[in-house]
Image (cartoon, rainbow, N blue to C red; front, side, top):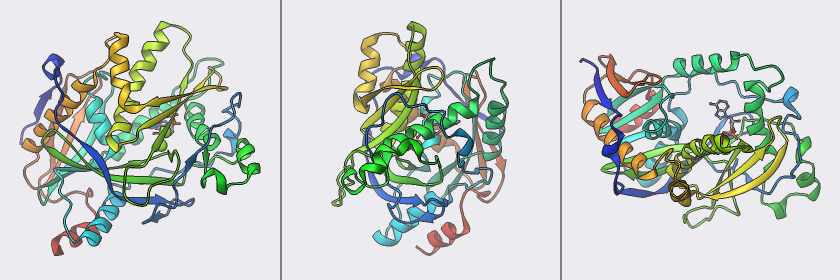
Length: 367
Ligand code: A3P
Ligand code: MG
Ligand code: MG
């Protein structure tokens, strides 16, 4: 098979009323515990409680317990969680595409992020296309980023990445506020920052004619996760530099697109942004309502991005992926930086590469 191309340009063709979207509904979830072990439960849910302003986000960088993500985990945890859902319901989940939220975010934001590049692997199995990140590509991009020499007196990439986790430690609780001691709440600044634990939500959603099952990390819940299956008041935490001028505002608006897509895909209604000074002092907190972000950006009129166009673009791109990934084997979905096309070509003629675990394949063959 020759490579086929999906043209991103001209983007004007994606304007207009947005394609149908299905409201995300959680069908399953899992946690990684504080040793990053998989658990088929919601034990790692965290609870939002406002952090103290004026805190130095650099504090604790030297004792940061950072998860080693050099191993390729493929879709393993997502598939385990899907299997758990299928065992309980007795039915195969209906999805055109199953993937991590991060992959959907990259695909959907490609229309307005010219510089971003990506490589993914895709395979068709029982009418569903499974998409994973090309782990080696991701590892190399991260290593390049990490090796970037920061300008004199400016924080390193690794430090800036730490700020995000530090902010989470300052703004979250391991249980709801009434179950946590006052002492814990007031001394979160002294906690050792650790990114081993995670809560991941697996949702059923849809864009255009493609039903999707997406898994992704949810940072916290505002109050309590309802037990009756109604939508939770999830919260996404983000840090951002305070804006000093119009240029900073425009940069922030571009970041808002990613915040919005990431949260919208999992049905996270609220985003809490911690604004920091250039050297990492937490200055103020802003609560954003996810659903109103595209409208606000449109009204401001900078024209950096458009939410309806993102949705229409994603809908068409998913159609293109479904029309291309039709045979046995493994396909590569690739976008090079500054390229106006997304290419798809075959990298393995048969099988599913390592995208699907044997456990999942065996389960599905029996079902
Ligand atoms: P910020 O988003 O506040 O920068 P998420 O926001 O998706 O919950 O991720 C939490 C934090 O992980 C981020 O906080 C950032 O610190 C770090 N992080 C996520 N993706 C990253 C990447 N590609 N490179 C470096 N750090 C990243
Ligand atoms: Mg997160
Ligand atoms: Mg976050």
